[in-house]
Image 1 (cartoon, one colour):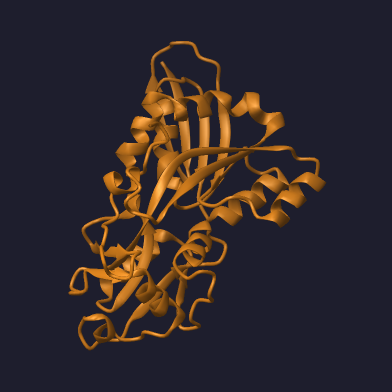
Image 2 (image 1 turned 90 degrees about the vertical axis):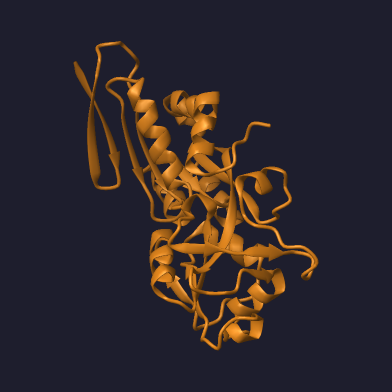
Length: 278
């Protein structure tokens, strides 16, 4: 029997497999907290058929992963946004030719506490809440209760996407509470009746309530779900990326091919994302 090891954050899991011979894959994957659960599951499944391989998966945000790619401390950068122009220039100036790969799609859900009677908001109302124009739930049909606004911190690709798609690049209100991880947003909203936040749909759980969003000023409201994101009726969707240096393509190719295979894309759906296959 041989042992394969997968390192997820600071947790190491040893898994015993048979003696079937495979070329070993040793990778470090770092970045987006949105992509993190997907990469963890894909790596875990990959290890079960690739004896002797070792994959380390670490979150921290898209910016963290891209910075790690720049300084050579990760093989793959996970990101929930495209590279910024200054990041592209830094990579180019450092002689790092890179490849961009879409591995899945995500729908961004706006969530509130389960005791909040508000179940739908327009895009404009969400923007007004996050920019500080609306500060009480009674202004949008809820209880007379102060709105506690949660956001990811600025190094997060989700922060950038939400600002672009929902706020139209307006600034977040200074009272907005910036959180270091998506899990922290879920936990805070579950404990705070007046809270609101945003997360990828793979993070949705029963401790919080996703709300329907209208992009046509209240004519129709659509819930975030796999089906609605896949058929494009839910508009707040985005691609999820892997970035890696072209010189390392041979090193990452086996894992990347697995992720894009039918088996890998089945895991995409299982974890709660939208597969890239039509």
